[in-house]
Length: 250
Image (cartoon, rainbow, N blue to C red; front, side, top):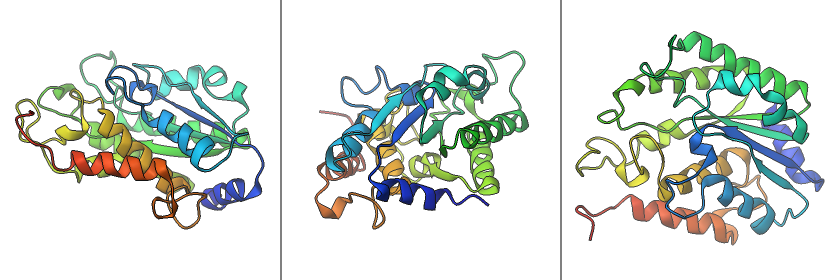
């Protein structure tokens, strides 16, 4: 089985320039819902090319609002191939899981096949795939996305089967303290800007999860929160504040 963690460690240790491509839907696209703050890929750009000092690296965001796994496969050359990536990160599933806006509805099995095909194509390029589960959803206001947990599990299963590094945002958001504010009962409202788009704090948590999984946030990485990383320290502080929100807001 491919050892992607070893491959990532090798890339980080080699000193050679790395091209990081992030793709997916509106959550990775990262517009509007951070209210002017940086999105997760922006944070990771600063982490990689700033704190880690990897100034020759390239960090590219090709995500598009509203997209799904099948659409990314249909536009794989533009989204991934032409950038000649070394690492490709995919977060997808929030749109794929809807039962109202697609005809026909995408079945979990078909989605799982798309994830497996994405991994195959990335590896065919000689790049390392990194999969991310989507965050949780406020089902009170987006009941059409009630299958989101099944789609997150499909990503976990594909990652386990093919030995892919996976960043489990769904689990991280689900473990966050549930909000009590109107419209977000039972959901981590401190991390969400609407029913399923992360807020600025949510994007901070997304970036932290990726950094740890890939190797920038632990002993094997180039930077760590306890070793002077301004970015990771700032992101951790943002998440800590969001864990103890006040309602109603001042």
